[in-house]
Amino acid sequence: MSVPSTLPAAPPAAVRPRLGWTLALLALAQLVYALDLNIVFVALPRIGADLGFPGQTQQLVVSAYVVFAGGFLLFGGRAADLLGRRRVFVLALALYAVSSLAGGLAASPAVIIAARAVQGIGGALLLPSTLALLNSLFAEGPQRNRALAVWGGAGASGLTIGALLGGLLTEHFGWPAVFFVNVPLAGLVALGALAVIPRDPAGRERRRFDVPGALTVTAGSTLLVFALVEGPELGWVSPLVVGAFVLAAAMLAIFALVEARSADPLMPFRLFRNRSLTAGMLVTFIYMATFGVLPYFLTVLLQSVHGYSALQTGLAFLIPSLAIAAGTQAGERLATRVGTRATLLIGFAIGVPGTAVLALGFDADAGYGLLVPGLVVSGLGQGIVWTAMWIAAATGTAAGEQGVANGIASTALNLGNAIGLAVFTVVADLGTAGRTGQGLRAAMADGEFLVVLLTAAVMIAGLLATLILPRRTPTGG
Image (cartoon, rainbow, N blue to C red; front, side, top):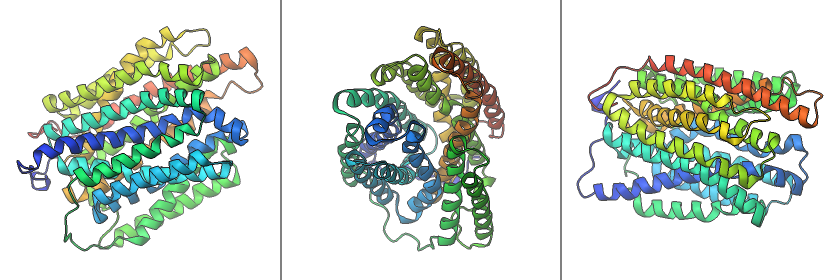
């Protein structure tokens, strides 16, 4: 739903040249964010061996990041609106740099898990503040579509660079290097932000932060993601997991009551009257529960079934990453020409059959070549949907509420990933009990074959959620 009165005014002519540098910096921040998600993943076996992680608990290095990122996203979005987008953006990058340094210096599992938790908080501040800057500095329509495509392409590049760099650094310099590399990158982007990104407006309206809302939603979201992430490892009837679910439900219920009665709520429920935001939130959830879990299962197939090294796995991600990057650019052009709704429909229409074809390559006896057609087609659809869903989430929201709107969409993204992994890892492991050697590898591949087919089927729900969107508007959304 396009609301012209809420759109940011076009920047003055004197400011426009700086927007190019601003976009480059915001894209670089997204590259750092995406790189950090993937660079650690390929180093997990080495981290576990050196620090004494039992194999089952190595996943805590990933889970600590996911849990805290998911829990603080809505808080991060509102903080960007109330405290200033540039301030929160720089703070997020500072947290990344400090926590990465601590992670690289870690000599025990506890320290590296704590460092990853702080990185997760940094990510929760960085993603919504970056999107809020993009959506407030670039006018709704073709200009914003192009900016989001560049930003999305940088994220797709981070998938490749993270996997490749993670493999190279781990094999030649050891696992601490995958943390240390973030320190100068995050520091340079933070310094560049102070020089390039416009200052936060002075004399902004004084508003209450809604501390009760922030505390309850952060606690509820963190507990919910923790339960979803740890359920497959600890067991769904584990007292810790059940307790986390119960407390999460209680905290989120209290949050809803607080928000309904607050004069200045953290998450104004009236935002959901905007069909574009509501549809964008649903699509981001489904996207991450389907497209978003594929890299995990692809990594398991390549490393645990086919025996690829960290470097070989990184190289294998080159093709899907290029396809996703191409899709992000196609998504921008399509959104400007035919509208966001049609673009999302096209993206899912490509992604569903592409992912179904990808499943054919999930076989213990199949080579990488059998994966390539599905990786290309599915990746193209994935990139198209990625760009268009963020356009949808930002359309029709006031400039002063872009942070919380993107916090809502980012929270949906993170929960989709947590729920998708929780459900599909259970499905993938159904036939592996009691098997070893080649039998185990075959069972793992068979389980993942079923998972990939199921993700293709669930993508149809994303296609249906897209129908909530209004048809093409004059702004190109």
